[in-house]
Image (cartoon, rainbow, N blue to C red; front, side):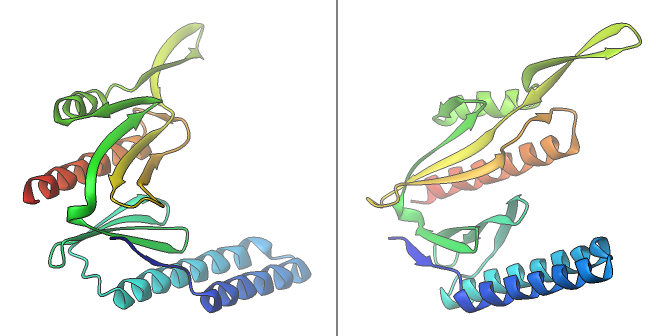
Amino acid sequence: MMKKDYASIGTTIIALFIFMLFVMVAIEQEILGYISFVAIIIGFVFLNMDRRDKMEKADFLVIREIRTRFYDHFLVDEANKKIGVYRGFKLEIFDFKDIVSYSLEKDGKTYLGSRALETAIGGLAFGTLGAFIGSAGKRQVYEECHSLTIYITVKDMYNPTISIDLIRHRAKTSSMRYKKAVKRTREILAILEIIEKMK
């Protein structure tokens, strides 16, 4: 069954307090850009500490860690046969045996089953037909993706679906952001396939 470890209220309050303090000083001194940069760095440090602290408390031994978006992570603990999803100051942990199925949704179209997933993964490099861009009187067509999400169904009546967002806003298929998202999607789906065969 799933274990939930919610954000430490103290850590969150301290992080927000420090951020607000920096913003107040920045407004007073008119150096908002520099102070905001420092505040973001401090925020990253707190997020990293929070994630590590939650994994330690849950005895979660990470052997594989894939960053999915900004500061969200997909985690694997092979020793204890668990996966974890960290997002928004919350770590959700599930046993391998509690994974029922998984699917990929791209631009509203869902792919379920190994063959369908292979087709979807193969087509990720091509994206969805996008807009026209005017260039020196010519019209060029580019491909784009608006959303890319992996859904994992687990044995939990209160929280049966885990969603792992890799793209939530429009991305050109030629962009580095899209290419990284495709690479991470392939890795996560490959891991889930291995887990399925281990059960």
